[in-house]
Amino acid sequence: MTLDSVYFDGWYTDMAAAPTRDAILARAMGMPAELQDAGALLWQGLAEVTAALRLTPGDLLADIACGRGGYGIGVAQSSGAHLIGVDFSAVAVHQATANSARLLPAGRATFQTGTLLETGLPTGSVDALMCVDAVQFGEPPLAALTEFRRLLKPGGRLAVTCWEAVDPADEQVPSRIHAVDLRRDLTKAGFADVQVREMPTWRQAEREMWEAAVAAPDADAAMRALQAEGRRSLDTFDAMRRVFATGTAP
Picture 1 (cartoon, helix red, strand yellow):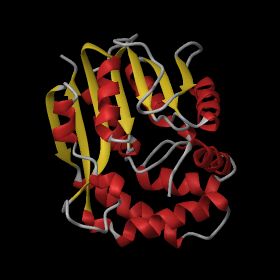
Picture 2: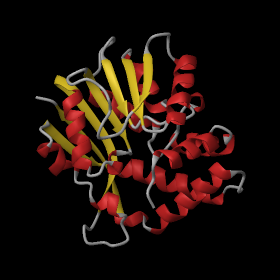
Picture 3: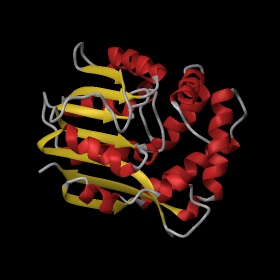
């Protein structure tokens, strides 16, 4: 299945009227409900991402594949950074803009359409960059990481969360996850100080999130989509590991 911008426009439209979905994910991940963007990353995990980015007030943070903006907004709130979010779904960009207007001071955040490989941002324009659970949609992921490297100023920090196959030969694992090798590709993309850590606590919280989603009532289109994703994820759960990667632009 090809997941294009039209698919995600519909997905985000459905989520706008899906409080049950948001409540389940926010509770499982410990995310503040007002961020309206809970996914598979723990609130504790977002704090680890924030620390790794080493932002200071006034720095510019790029959140690539930002979705409804909640994760980037959370980092901007705690760090005092300015935020530029990029997503290829126009509906997501519209929702992220509305969310930032509620949660950040005026002028602290902007959002625009763009892709993992063509963000539309200037070279060397950001102090830090985050990509939460989306680099696997780059075709290939190395091209996305190369684009991230282009955007960062010298000394800028990168934080990427994703999944990798436990066994590269396991055919249960989706092809887009098989393509992810963050240690290899961050080095190829020109990053220094590359660290890739497995995050078992994050992974366990994700399992509990999917179990809660599958057990919940079938309330609406967004819940049905979440439950279908949850069943697929639980079927192959032990075939993938949760990873958190960081690097520095030389």
